Length: 356
Ligand SMILES: [Zn+2]
Image 1 (tube, protein in one colour):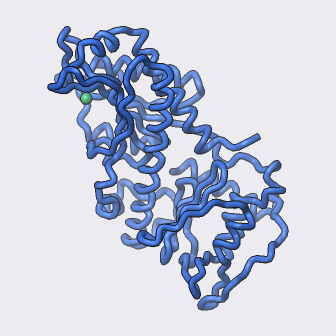
Image 2: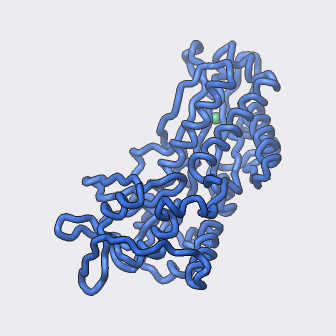
């Protein structure tokens, strides 16, 4: 989050110093509510061609155009802007049946992120791409993970794919942090800590599957299950001072506010994880000669604890004779790593890369 917040601060300085060209004022209905000026969110979205989605049950709003996304919640003074937390000063509201946001938020964030389309061509990239990835090779040391019929050990397959993926990402200028780079045992909590301390953009855990049903085969990718209670997880995180927000704006906020923020971040991260997993499944389907089972939610400890979009890839079934043969082959493991790398790049392109 530090990096994204830094980018935001840089653009705030630009705004304050008047370097950014502000679009001319548009005629959008304003409302005075308790001394604060609000604007109609729907009118604004229509004028700017911003797609918006309101969930009446959760009272959440998602605004999206191109690479940018804003998550808001009625009654909350917090927003997620491209995944980073922003403070609105006044809450998003519903006034006389109209969904409204503070004018100040429109001017300071929306006007910058979603400029009128005629100014689009001059837009400078705000967030370029994925900069840091944590790669987690599952098992290791005294924990071999699954063992195939020929004796192929999951921990070795995982580490080899992880190393190959690490090289590919580093060749793309991405910083890689490995939770282990040799045959050692690393407890799950330690893996989570490594990822959170690194403040990585993505967490990729690599495993290989096994099942009693030996005919089962294929690659599948997991994200943290929607059945996991985000608000409960958020409260625990908010109580953990180790995981406090870096920005001084949040240092004096109440526990409740912090919990709300973490709740939004967790929900946001789940959505991003699903998109990332989907992109990897697509490239894997094209590159690999194996069945693609798909994307599923699960309650894995490493996915539950990590503070960034996180996925766990089961690269194939060691319990399946054919797939064990494939996973034994270095060329195939390279193909798996390449499929993951390309999936990450496609995800970054569609979710972060800006046009131009
Ligand atoms: Zn495993």
